[in-house]
Image 1 (cartoon, rainbow, N blue to C red):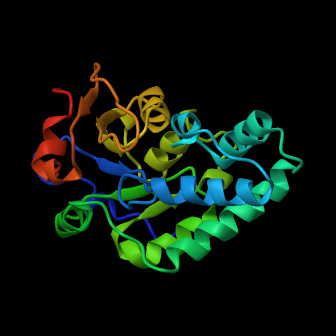
Image 2 (tube, helix red, strand yellow):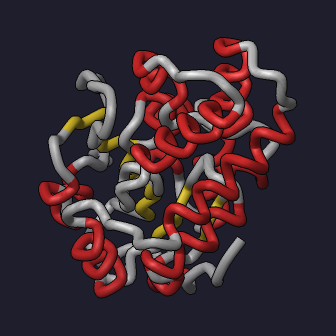
Amino acid sequence: MTSTVPALGTRTAEGSALQAVLLDMDGTLVDTEGFWWDVEAEVFARLGHTLDDSWRHVVVGGPMSRSAGFLIEATGADITLAELSVLLNQGFEERIGHGLPLMPGAARLLAELAAHRIPTALVSASHRRIIDRVLTSLGPRHFALTVAGDEVSRTKPHPDPYLFAAAGLGADPARCAVVEDTATGVASAEAAGCQVVAVPSVAPIAPAPRRTVVPSLEQVDLTFLRALMPLG
């Protein structure tokens, strides 16, 4: 896990109930959800199997153990979960080595949060080796803390990653704004008690209590996130 937690005096902007912002990575800040599916399709093609495009909604946003396990079971491929995980991580690293596109609005939002000294964490189901590679594009300076899927006992959709991040920033989960792009990530953040902004990347996400759905990260700024916080 990276960097340090800001001093107590910087945890909230004056007059704001927002204590921290917790951001998903794939499909939220970086346009990589399609990368994962392409790598999965390529790996399984080498194993002699064709992935059904309808499975994409099943595997998106979840931990690799769940996604890879589902694909092994669905295809009947002769490969272990551990072997497949290695191949998928290797393929993804090769793919992002050719360039990593940020989602529209991501760079602007990260710069705004940093300028106002809002404690910010990156919370991903991806493994540490992948997060560290992506951070070179996002800028590690933007995050007081990063949480990887292979560093918690239960990753998304369980609440553990977001509870861990909030605790690491000294924040009340109810005073944290989470930005996610998948139903799995949204379920994790809501189970942790956070206020959620959903920016769907692959599959639709419906509005719900404590959940605001927007079509693009370009609509999300600090004023928007502060307005999500409960009164009192």
